[in-house]
Picture 1: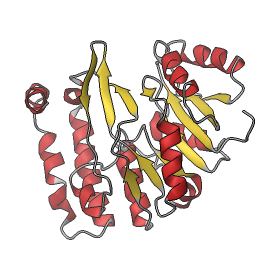
Picture 2 (picture 1 turned 90 degrees about the horizontal axis):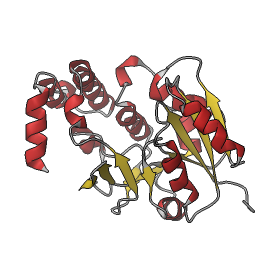
Picture 3 (picture 1 turned 180 degrees about the vertical axis):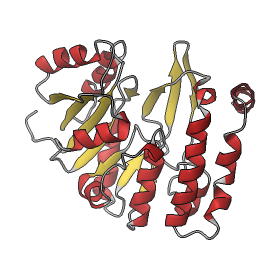
Picture 4 (picture 1 turned 90 degrees about the vertical axis):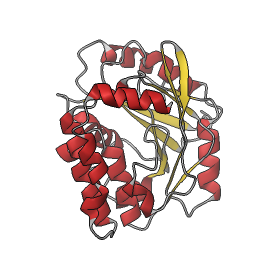
Length: 265
């Protein structure tokens, strides 16, 4: 790179040896080149760390670190942030694909719109049989959108590092496991920051078609508890009311969730 990086991509990698190279190649195919990458292995049981080290040997803008034990995504991303010194922070997962113009379009938007602290976009969902769904996202979510679901996709996000530091980074606690992004967005909004969703999908998420049905009871129970806390922190009266849908989901059998989701596609 002839110019210093403006973006650092933080990647928590775990048991993704078979897909990691494809994910990293999608970064190398970006039309915007001023970025570097921090890869943190979270105690993988396969050879993910070996694959990452081998890649970094021939790509000097990649840093590889590792956790002594599996500490989950939020703590892993905070570990990555210890190595970040750029203006912007991007996310990426080790089994997904960033479309080639992702960084170009995201950084162009944030450079032109200082009123937003971060930007995301809808995702294309794919599996071994190909693409099967394109998500949707409200362009300018407000606090009320947090009462329904997470208003932003996590993996395609680009954030201003100074704002991320102001809100205290990710909350690495058991209560946020699998919903660390929802909790992060609400911390931005509690501090007066806002986010924006581009309407063009710039990211492909590898996700089995029945992945939504594999959520365990405890995952859905955490969803209820965190939704209630988020709505309380955002100033809504009777915040427990907004947690009821998540509470009810905790008692819906996985096979029924699968049927409902399939009908909605």
